[in-house]
Length: 143
Image (cartoon, rainbow, N blue to C red; front, side, top):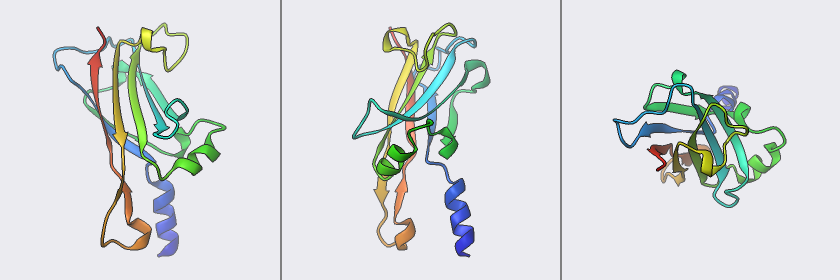
């Protein structure tokens, strides 16, 4: 039983959420790239984890899940320190020709920010008394 709980914890997402369009009439270009990043509230400029993929593969709205494999190399120790904090989760849509990802704010075509909050659940057994709420990321076109 204990070994099964350890396996569940290893395979549990470190953060999850939903990305959706604020305006259903607008859509990013299929050639653009969606970039998702996670940082702690205490150090919002320090990206801990991330993922990217082409817009043509994303069916908006979509759910996402980050696992330990999404933690940026070299940030594992920092992640362990802040794992029980609230996380800032950001989604941005960058043009295909962006030189860096995530692209600078002046190059972003769409963006969204959300919080994945740690919630204390009263009355649960000690090991699972705290859960991480999913982040909601409403993608909005940048004017």
